[in-house]
Image (cartoon, rainbow, N blue to C red; front, top):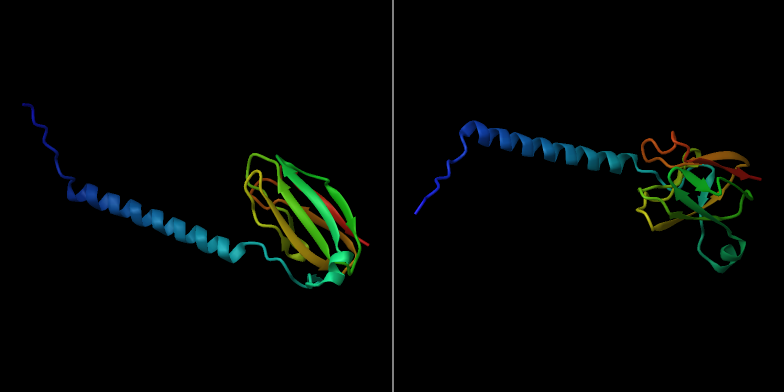
Length: 150
């Protein structure tokens, strides 16, 4: 019979493996903290959260927006100031996407292909507000649009 001997790792190899594991954990922790600190919020100045109730439902404006690589459809839409807005965002692309109106601090979650997310807010100021996908590189590649509030 042929017996194969297994040589235990040297102390240097063992230490290198432990360092790699520690650095991997540090990277994961930093990424998790970065996500928690910098993920888009849903409400801020100039925007009121939707108030629950039958009266608001009848008054709510709904916009259905689809995201793909690397565009929104439609890329422009108009809503009325002071009326609740429901944006239903659907990801028909191959990569994760979101819809973020940065100046209003309104954002959907970053969703996987085939998923959808809804964000509801009430714009309090008239004007034009750019929206984009905040996944790195997506807005640079054209994933932007414009919301007009009248």
